View 1: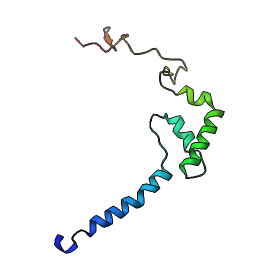
View 2: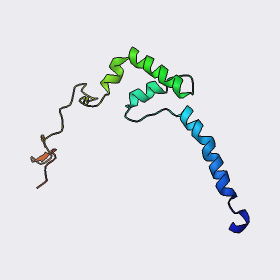
View 3: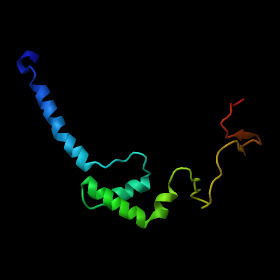
View 4: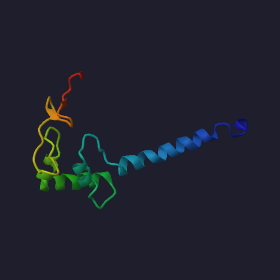
Length: 110
């Protein structure tokens, strides 16, 4: 069976890859190191072309700097129930049921 088809599947596979490269380049924007809020702005463009989406993203990012900077790296996490900033989960200890306490730190558990 394989001797009958010889190298034809290779040519079909190569043709599909050659055809898909320009599509990926032109239609799929880069999402590396972007937050979800930035990705939402990136896909807000009406055009499917990457260059139009990047241009629209730059415009929306300039118009909404607080939206993008609120989700940038290094900012504290906001508690959704209280609406306040959470402290870092360094070496805090919390009370658990039964009167004991449990550590939330990165140290070893004993």
